[in-house]
Image (cartoon, rainbow, N blue to C red; front, top):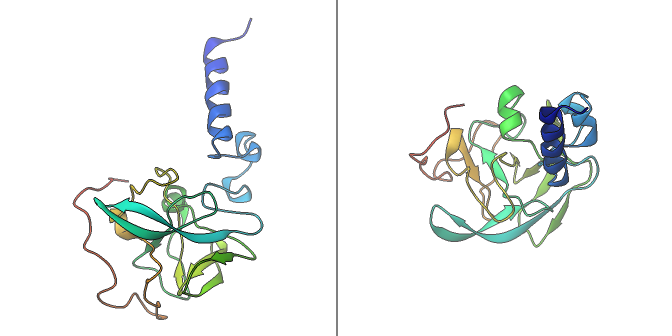
Length: 175
């Protein structure tokens, strides 16, 4: 006889996998770093623009090939991502050996860092947010992450230029 909790867990795991939240390698117990997550890609990643509601106002933002909003992390530098460990689980880095741009005016590149081949836009390493879905922005201003837009100013090697980051949202996650 099958145990009901195992069956329910298996159904839930299959539903998450079908939605693209995990891969079979992760479900089988392989390290998460070896399997692409929502923001990652083993091969090519496409970055494009899309309209989305950001703090109640429709804006043109950057999204990945699956339509997930892309974010930048204010403390990052052009030479280094500071998003690792449990923070990277909530904010999966967008990785790709050969990212493609669709309709972008800025510079898309790859930064070889702690997260592998992380995609950058105008020097800003890019991330998705674990709580987002296509067309939904829920991470704006949380933990110093902000939605990437086509007009995102070039990141210098030390820090984000002054005046390019909106004020933090009063709502936050206590991770």
